[in-house]
Length: 325
Image 1: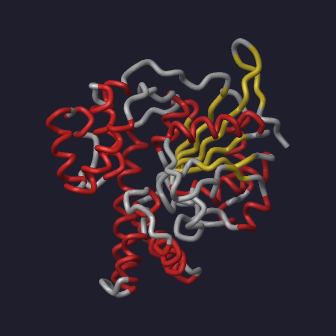
Image 2: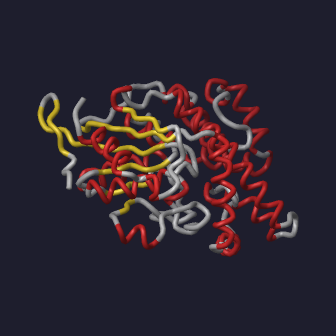
């Protein structure tokens, strides 16, 4: 069992492992194998898997997996407690501090970037700005508010999707509350992660393989009760602007439950939106230099199960993780 401690410049530095990549690329399976071999703790770096209400639909690790190796930050928040990068960074750092070999696993690039590069601290502002943003989203809709944001803060608005009500509202409240756009605050100096020697494994499978995996996985989710999960979630009558209400599969299965789509149509729509998201994830990871090239190992394949974990394959990865240079 490895301790995760290495000697670096200025004293001992601990080893941090990141397993990243698009949805359904096999990150969880690979992280499990690594944790078993290295005595590691798997730390969730997927925004939707932070919530407890949708274990199946967000593909959280099973109860058996969580019992097999230590897991952290999975299902730790209620749907009414929106997670964000600032909260997650502090929570991840706390777990990293006590884990023998921390293994971050997830595809939320914004969380990983916040951890490694720091996160902008936006000054406190009047709560009225937040209330105004939420009211405008409800009254005129996210696309219309996005258009207003484009007029006053184009640098931020140009980076946001027109339907992303949560981020558009956040950008509007920052502009209204501070007089400066969110992009301005994001360019201010931040405190980067220090004291850790990072190794990142990026899964970048061929898109046809990813599409097939998404289809297979969603079919399995339906078998495991995804429809019932969504039904229970909707019964809580939560604010539709909450992040978990927009998780892949929720709007589509909600349409099925309302009789607006057949289950086949809802499944096809969920698979499509998930696949489109994976394309954006893959593009983002390819263009973000989160770590030095020497600390990055890219696998151009999907990890599909234990059959791929040969001693040769895992031996190379373990050597990459524990050895210096």
